[in-house]
Amino acid sequence: MQETGVAMRETSEGLAMPATCVRAAAAPDFRQRLPATEGELAGEIALVRAALARFLKLQHDGIAEPISQERELLTLVRLNKIGNVLRFERDDFVSNDAWSRTGGFLDAYRRKTNAINSATLSATLHAAAGLREEKVDFVLFKGPLQQKELYGNYYAKPSGDVDILVHPGDFASARACLMRHGYGVERRANSLWWSHFLGEQHMVRDGGAAGVIDLHHRLQQPGMPRPRDSALFMARAATIDLAGTALPFLDPADTVLLSSISIAKAFFNREPCASHVCDLHAGLRRMDTDGRQALVARARDEGLHGTLMLGVRTCWSLLGVWHDGLSGQSGEVLPATGDDELRLMILAPWLNAIDWPKRRDILWNLCDRRYRRFMVEAAWAASSEVGRRLWAERGNA
Image (cartoon, rainbow, N blue to C red; front, top):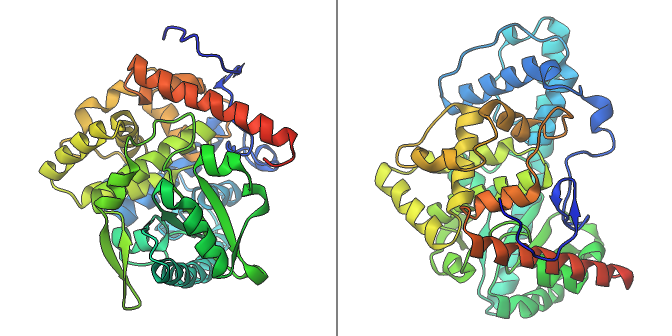
């Protein structure tokens, strides 16, 4: 890729993004608790893939040999948020103790998910009622409602956020409305950098009640291709029922695009994202070939074609499945990255052995190698970093 000449800070990884924006996967204990090479995780990754295939009713190659080190397996499960969709078998484990510990972990994981998501559903109804009372136009996305659409239940993975999209012009009034209904802006998100560049703010209930509101007027972070017109996502919204209340929710095609956006964001931030890949596959599986081809056209219109194709590649790499009408162009995204390495990026992005592309190269590929689009998004990322530094110096970012 040619140099762009855009003035931005560079690191060895490419575009330098704000530290509060890049929630890197390498939390302090990751490298201490997990192996440093992919070979040492090969058995655990193979088992995760097989267990996902069982749940999704896909073909798989089986397990080469049972595992005995369940700690690494459970860490993969937890960080990828897939504990409620895995289907393990006794023969996957060497010892009864390992099988028992894994089962105990998954039982506790499901109980915790049920508690978290139940609180999120309650917060969804509370926030939606407040916004409707004050006639603020909004659309819900992700969270337990999406899980109900994709998997038939509200508890496929833990989700503590209520994601709400509003028009940019309504963002301040929506925030004020939620504050009148008992929410306050989370301290770390209380800056113009969050509201202007990230296009969102996190809001929490007075008294520490569960259920964080993630109020958005944009659908992607700086450094990644953004939808050209988020208002169309709201205009196309469908409705979904929750406890007898009809709520506005993204339509199925836009839900698929949002899953692709989440995967791209995870790649940029080097976060585990197997749950988003499963969501993408589940959404695509609900479409016929004509619907998927219409999805490609919509993605092109929104400037998200490369983002969607990255998602399609991850479905193949992790799950071994192509979707009719989509697979032909996916190899054009990150062509220098093989599927085996892509799988590690999905499941275990903290591994030292991964040869990560620079972030500017990820952006270049997701922009379909279109120079003008890349320049626009790179300039936006550079402006975001300048803004973050300015507000950080004032103690506000």
